[in-house]
Image (cartoon, rainbow, N blue to C red; front, side, top):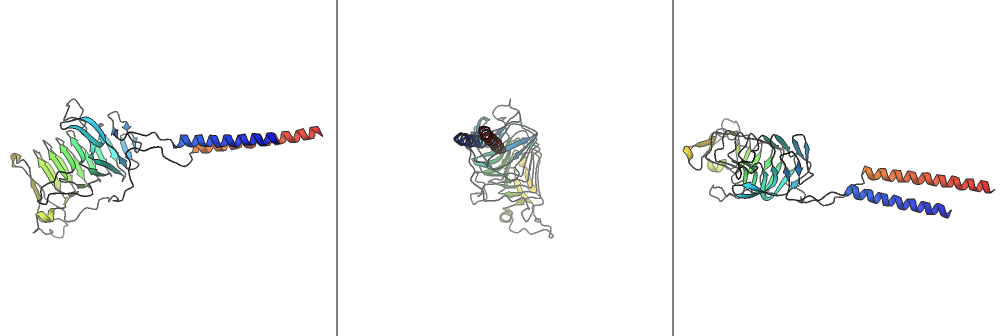
Length: 332
């Protein structure tokens, strides 16, 4: 009987040990650097497990926070929450948030301003993403044909200096030499909300909520139409609604800031009321740049070990019990 108890004790100890080892393996998650979040030119996602790749679509599965410093801009190093080096892809935020830590949010420049040997980034779709706490929400240097749809791109507070001029403490979307960019059904906040400079052309800004204004310089043909402008009433206090259309009866106009060719731009059909665009929650859990080992429920791997060990223990006990009874009968 003592032998049976010893065997049983050993089996219980083995079961506990195997379960502990399984749980350690199940719960271990490698710590990733917080300064290396990128979609690389070869398609890999580095620096996070929260962005999942499926072909040319990259989907957020949770909130993301991080910075990446790299060489490659005329202003020196660029730090951003997410660097994109690959063309012809879709980034689907799935309603989650990109926390930018007072840096650029998504950088699509790939260093072309610094080194013209770098490849321009083209045809990137960014949708359903909330981008906050940035100096520039999305930055594009050259390249283009991008689509930004259904995003919330704004800090909590958009500031200006009280005179109607921009404070330049944050820019919602910045285009430098980019062309063919389509921006629609987004809420864009910044001072300015949209910045276009240096031979940008053929970009479309249609049906957005824009807080606060647009700044264009040395720009080509640009289309602004059916946007809600938060400062419209301040600029046009005598305007009224046009025939219950939901649009103001006066265009929202602005000029090329450099007076280059004395260009004038306008939204001919400014909206009186904001558009119903998906409203991302303002209350967010704390997002950490680097995630340590996470605690999960016992995995299927752990369960399989427990079941297997228990079955072996039960089988041995039955075998020992039968052997003990056989010995008793033999001795009689």
